[in-house]
Length: 76
Image (cartoon, rainbow, N blue to C red; front, top):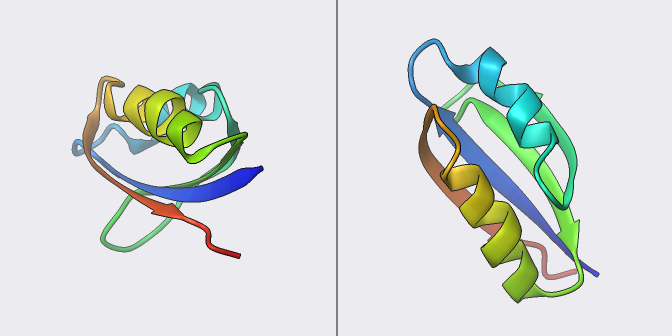
């Protein structure tokens, strides 16, 4: 299994509404609204790096209300 953390910056005022859609995305284990440079932090898990990038990161990036994402693949 490959695990990743995806940082999501939401359009102003959209973080709470976006949380449910992010939690429903394929491969997402947990998602939380956080304070800081990004608005949500998402933990995802899939069988391969390709699946993380294709279904999770791209799927989240395409959601209405997402302004930016950063994906960090766990190396341990």
